[in-house]
Amino acid sequence: MSKFLVSGILQRETIVKIDELPIKYQPVTDTFGSIHSGVGGDSYNEAIALKWLGDEVSFFAMIGTGENAEILNSNNNDIELDTSFILPKLYATPAAVIFYDQTRKQQIFEDIKDSRSIEYDLDLFKSQLKGAEMLVTANANFCRPLLQAALEDGKKIAVNIRKFKYETEQYNKFFLENADYLYLSDDNLDEDPYDFVKYIAEKYHPEIIILGQGADGLILYSEREGTYAHFNPVKTNEIVNTVGAGNALFSCFLHYYNKTGDHNFSIKNALLFASYKIGFMGTSNGFMTEKEIEDWRSLIWKT
Picture: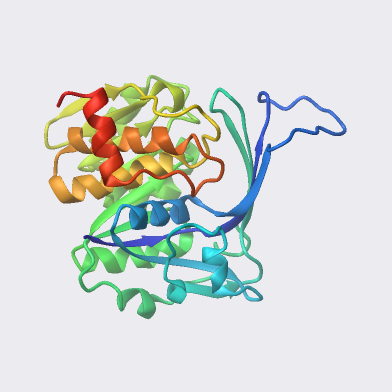
């Protein structure tokens, strides 16, 4: 069992399944089973997935001053996260509304409240560094001092930057420069994806880059091997909800890569993990066990 530190946004979220994006105006749309509400956020989803896979997880996030930290476990999952590191320091808990369609397109409206200007308790974070092997962090502003502390303590750094844009690259520079493992999405790309991954690899030199491409699969870059490889998605479930698939994939990859150091083995397991997860509603439901991953793997890949 590995110990992971995870930092980022915890939010209330509402997920809405629609026919297609962009949304066509209608005064009222009545569709059974199309709306799901709960708590989520990229980092929350990653923390839950790592815990499900058997890792020890400490999750660092902030909520509204009027909230109870037990909101963290309000989704009634089979597993729970430690609430000791959920601090009520914001004027309100971050929130998001996520629309998605059958083609895996998403449109997200989010409000992270005052988390850009509020600092997390650095001493509390440092108290959990001992024995931890990796920090998995979002690019939220309050995560910067946590990342610096983890670096100084010699931890591996994994960063999820879902919404990369060249115009915000300077904001993300600190995260990009210090990431050992980097997850990016192609949502905002209008260039050749290989050229983009090569640009990031040559400028920032992470050990691993994963570029999520939705229904087209992903591109995996390994600095150690000097390779850029495309992987198609796999199918284990009918698609119900694609929100959180990238978080599931990144978490599973980190879990196995931390154990084995084998990027091909790890990414194949991660593709299975994400494929199964999108058959369930909610960003924190539908996770495979290691045994289920092993069984599916033997059906799809020979190696």
